[in-house]
Image (cartoon, rainbow, N blue to C red; front, side, top):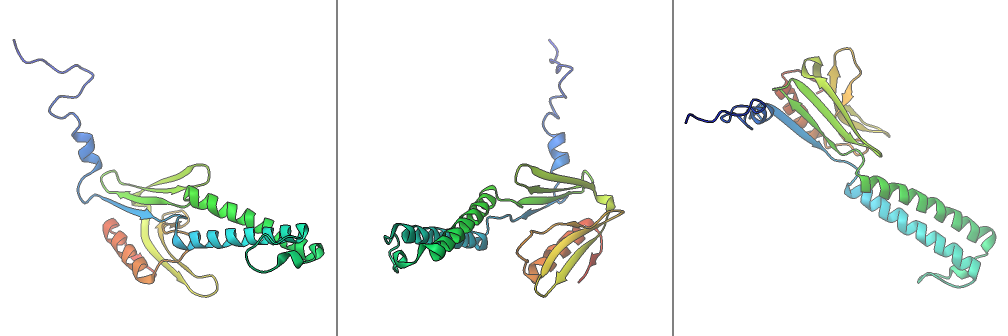
Amino acid sequence: MGPIADPPWMPPSDVQGSDVKAQSSVPGSVLEQPVLGSRRPSNLAMALVVSLGGVGFLLTSLSSYLGRDLLPIGHPAELVYVPQGLVMGLYGVAAVLLASYLWTVIGLDVGAGSNRFDRATGSARISRRGFRQTIDVEIPLREIQAVKVEVRDGLNPRRRLALKLQGRRDLPLTRVGEPMPLADLESSGAQLARFLGVPLEGV
């Protein structure tokens, strides 16, 4: 009896599970840069401070209304409810709403994602997590003209990497909200420019 042939709907047994994997993971052909989202120590500290402040304001307002101290420090019951206690309550409601938003953003890790550049497929995929869905942008590597390093100081500082695209707006790559250290920014930009074989602008 001769060898049993593979079914027509299957690839030959000597290449099953090998070609596709090899094409998608050629050593040195993929560069993936993780992007930090909202789960940062600074955001956690801010959410905690706002939460404690909001609860404190609400307890102060309630103590003023009930005439009984509900806080372990001070004597908020001595405050006149109108207008002092009422204003404290409004501050507390605003702080609690802001804290709820911050904890939601942190819990969903909004802004987290990755930048994946694959020379084997000739494409770049930029992925970011949003409130309701993940945002994916895929572009051909041939449209990337340069890697830009943008540094702006002042009251509203900006330090970010961006892709200069042919016929499109620049596509930002780095996280939003907290500027990266300049040394890390330049190092990441130089690494990406070498990988893509394009110039590095702005340094």
